[in-house]
Image (tube, rainbow, N blue to C red; front, side, top):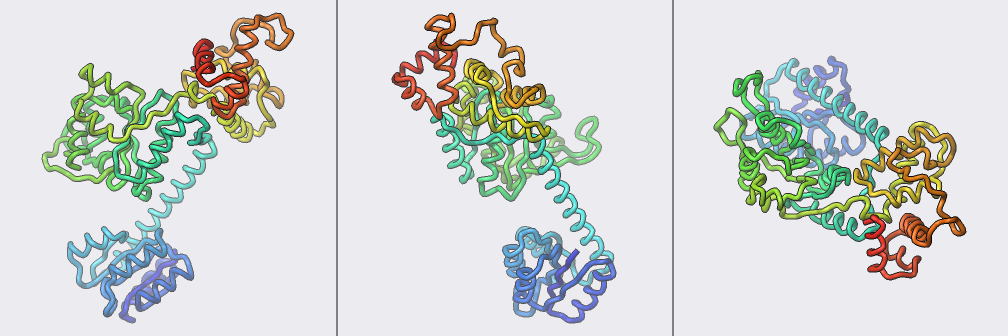
Length: 444
């Protein structure tokens, strides 16, 4: 690694520099904050040893400037004036670690080992994120439909505030994707985004996963565990499918929201956590409250900002661009040249209710790309639910009823139009009439 050594004592710079070099690292030594800033602006460093007192300079002030110039720099503070207060303050301001003087080569070696391990883990995380991005297409958070546009507008405005956000909508509409985007647009973006799936565990294990536990608090608790709340401190805690949160745990979550306090399982000492909460559910929480399965006070505390994502059947104008995005991704992934969908496929898509929403659309197109024999996705490449009764292709002059011809025409216009207003104009009818016809055809 390239290591920057900032100390106003030449003897310390020389001896520490020699120790670091014998460990196989490259060292640049400077006597003050100005020289240190110039160094990080001119070259990249992996680690920095910074003295707390640099003559008349405050090392903590230099720390802030170094991290502003190089946010990924791992800065280790050292000083002869070490105490708990200064250590805590240094860590609060972003220091990687703190070593008191006099220190030994073993202490230097240990902290450099920790820095190297952290860099390795960050590199592996980036590789995994890149790999996941290559393996799964991203859900585009954009829409031509007013319902979805309004939902996204509310979510993105609220993302910049510390407000709790409740995301509602059917399964497969992209609630978890929106939750992560809210985090990326928030003041907590540099901290962790931690997901907890509420239906995944029993209430006993769920409480331990959420709040942590102490050793011996239950059978199998062989070590202390901090829990997801601690992991999300200063970041975002995403509770997926919160409608299934066990009733016994709901008061504890309410306490976390109201007082920023919680207790680990088996521990009476309260702990504090500053987390931004985003929750999602496909259930009608108001109905759950009436049925006694969800606390009313928790519901009101969660429902500060509520965002409802519409199902795919309520976003007909988005169907074509979403399908084309998925097609490009999966065709590129397996190396097939597929340029589009046949007219009969578009008609089948338009007439299908999409109960699984975006998730189902993704799976349908992945399957179709795998099975397609030519450059166009055909009806035969789609799953069974898209194959209705064996009717002839509906076209002008075919032996079909006027109603069937009108229904097919409406379906195709809905697929090709950017939004419902454009579809109504193309059809020569008002939006209210189009709504009634969509309702009759089961396209709502």
